[in-house]
Image (cartoon, rainbow, N blue to C red; front, side, top):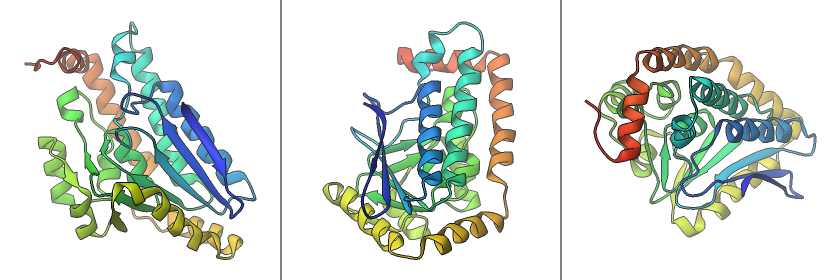
Length: 250
């Protein structure tokens, strides 16, 4: 369990998140994921990365229980820095990253999928940012890479989710497949990239990042500043406590 990497002879690095029950990562878990992604990209043998998860869903974001169990703001700072590192690592990985998404892709999951180069999704996959209901903000930067601007805003304000089929319509998901076929299809897509000239593919990743109209690292860091403000104002603790207890914050 945790974060594991499997290297295939074809040049595919398969990075798997397995953190029961819902793949909500601790601060350490986010940093471990970042390290795995960057290490895979630095490995000259790697031509493409497939990022996927075991269990009920792709990723449920940060571990809220870790935050509640930690006095002060250390856990919030750790989670913010960990998420920043992991999202940036997907983006900065020296080879293309394919996110294979099943089940829920929420909060931090959107940060990972939104920064991926390609998303392949299972039929049961859905995406959303519950941050407003948790007294936090963030990953709208990455959601904006998956849906149009006005839908992104509506999703942030209302915390509504969108399905993989909707994202297929918007063109941000490459394919939607049955859940049992997700891993194989993601590896097939990766295999097509792995057969290309690896030097050219690495330069392609670098060039595509270079022409992005939005600096995703700076944009996300700006969002995180408001999460710190909400934490200092007490809104973060109030909404997280209500979520864990099953109630609703006022």
